[in-house]
Amino acid sequence: MIRNTRGSLIRPDALPETASSPVVTPLSPSVVYASDTPDMLDDQYEGHVQGYTYSREGHPNADVVAQHIDRMEGAPHLGIVTASGMAAVSAVLMGLLKAGDHVIGGNRLYGRSLRMMTEDLPRLGIETTLVDAGDAQAVQAAIRPETKLILIEVVSNPTLRVADVSCIAQLSQKAGILLAVDNTFTTPKAFQPYAYGADIVIHSITKLLAGHSDVLLGYASARDATLNDRLRTFAVTAGLTPSAFDCWLAERGMLSFDLRFERAQSNAAALADHLAGLPGVTRVIYPGRADHPDIERSTDLLGENACNMVSFEIAGGRDAANAFTRAAHGISFAPTLGDVGTTLSHPASSSHRALSPEDRAAIEITEGYFRVSVGIEDIDALKSAFTTAAAAAAQSA
Ligand SMILES: *Cc1c(COP(=O)(O)O)cnc(C)c1O
Image (cartoon, rainbow, N blue to C red):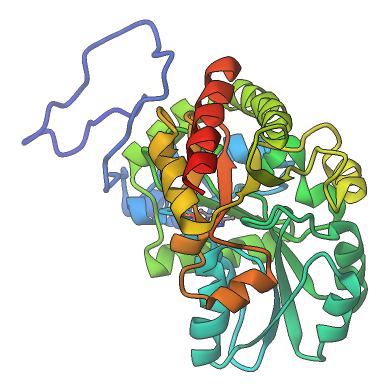
C-alpha cells in the first residue's frame, strides 16, 4: 500500500487503518511521489533504493503490467509499458536508431508501423527496406553494412502468412543486427521471440493481452540491459508513458488472458472449418488448417497455437461484402482484434484502403476479403451468425 504521509496539511496524513491487504492491485494515479530527504532522492536516482519520483518516469501500475508480460515472454529485464502499441514501436525505432542507420521491415507489418517505415524514419535520415518476412533470402539480400535492425511480425495482417522467424533470427545474429519481433498477433502463449533469438519484443497490449477494447497500451523490452535502459529513457523523455488507470484495466484483463486465448483459439479453428463449408466462401486462411500455405512453418513455430485470427473471401465483390456485414448479427464490424467479442474487418475499405485495387490484388486482398478476430462466444452462436451472413451475401451476389 502506498501511504500518503507527505503534504498532510492539505491531504489526509494516513489512509484508513487495515490489518489486511487488498487482493486487487491498488490503483496509483499519483503523478508525484514524495521522498524523505535530498539524500534519499539521490539514492533513488542513483538506483541504490527503489522509489518512484514522477509518474512519467514510471509508476507501480505500469510496472505490474510490465512484470506480467516479462514473465510470459521470459524477458530478462523489467519491460517498458507505453501509452499504445505504436508508442512501443516508436520507442524501439526512434529510441535505438540514428540518422544513417538502415532498417529492414516486413512488408506486411501493421499499417502504422509500415507508415513509420516509409514516411517517418526516412524523414529522420533512417533508410528502410521492406521485404517479405516469409522469405529469409530476401531479408538476407536486403542487409547492408549500415543495417541496424530488422522488425517483423510472426503472422502477417490480414493475410495471415507466417514469417520465417528461425532463419531471420539466425541471419540477424550472424550479421550482428538487432531482431525486433512484434508479438501482438501471436501472444507469448503461442510464440516467445526471446526463445528464438530475438533481441527486442513488442506488444500492442490493446489487443489480446488486455482483451476488452477498453485500453490502448503497449510494451517493449530488450534482451540486452543497455538497450532496455535506452528504450526506457527514450520512452520517458518522449512521454510515451501510460496512464495508471489504463494499466490497472489491462492488468485486470490479463488475469483471464490464458483462458480467453484458449477459447478464442479453439473457436477460431472451428469457425475456419465451418466457413470453408459455407456457400459463396471461396477461400479460408487459418494458420492451423492443413490447406494453409505455411502450415509446416506454422506448426513448427506455433505448435498447436494457430491463434484466433481467420481470414476468408466471399464471391460477389463489394455488394456481397455489404450484405455480409449487414447480416452478421451480433458480430461487430470494427477494425480491431483481440476483443472478447468476435470482430469482423474488411481490409479493402479500412486498413488497405490507400492501396490501389491492383496493389491490393497483388497481396490477394479483394472486395470480398474479410478478416475475423474470433472471440470467446458460444461457438454454435458464432457459426450460426456466419451461416446467416454468408447466405445473405450469396443471395446478393
Ligand atoms: C494494433 C497493433 C499495433 C498498434 O497498437 P496500438 O495499441 O493500436 O497502438 C502494433 N502492431 C500490431 C501487430 C497491432 O495489431
